[in-house]
Length: 389
Image 1 (cartoon, helix red, strand yellow):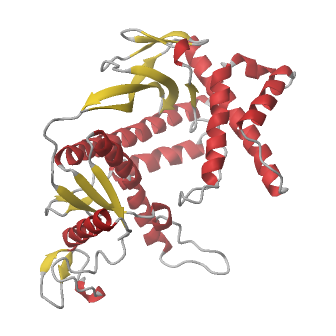
Image 2 (cartoon, one colour):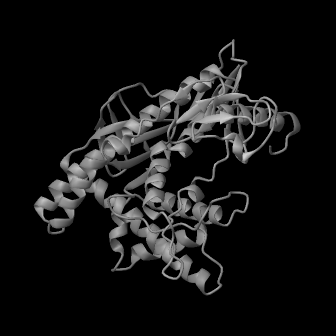
Image 3 (spheres, rainbow, N blue to C red):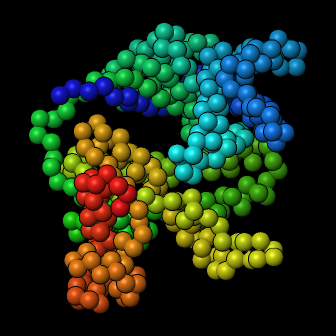
């Protein structure tokens, strides 16, 4: 059986000095356009007016190019600016989409954080062994670590730390393996253990942020003491970016390896539909109603975000789709208090953070593994009934 998938190949670029300046310029132009039309739309919302969508934004962006004040936008490829406006339109639509929980209105893009631009037209792109030809940039070399397979759909240039990367999105035809796995597994995500599997296995977290936390704090203090935009400030900023890049790479590598292993060995994977945004909310409160245990909650929030649960579920979902598997999410209520043997639910079943002992049938198990088995059982209910468990 064959199927079409979208896949991205990411490479580190080897640009010339002139191309580096163009990268900075194009990313700045796209960021400016995003922020400009975001501000206009937010102003319209505040005054209860209809917001602009792509057609109207594109029309006004062309008028901006004709003005003396914003004529610099002509330097950037038109397709890159148009794509940024399409992204803004989609962000607004997602922000008002009631079927997408946790969505919000788009926010301003910041320099050194949101540095990217996309070429959506494949006809303008040429690819050779270790270089790619892009509009107004010419041939740009990259470190070729794997062969690009499939027809090119679009190309994105983005900054990661102190380096620039190219992501080549392709449409690729894959062949499903003849013998697909038939087993199913439930996963309970946590902080002490990154994941507990219903099979009885515990997976330790990588905690990439915690590893570099001390070094990050030292460099951030040094950066704060330097004169902004001075040479010494720039040097510290470069080192700080490198550490953030390492943290992201370690985390991404861990998640990719684990999701690949799980998707290839199971036909169905069930996880909890955790509301990460709510779980990692600040406990500071307000002046009139100050929060409690703020420092402890801050540490917990940092640990939760360090696990990258959202990215884990995103990767697991598309990798299972590629292998014709099923990804199921269930509500997390009472999974840690319910006995996976007799079904008795009581908060006193949790004797400690790591130990589960049912007060009804005396069943004893690691608390996270018991929760993972409840998650799997709820997944079977969802699959059989088509309802949320």
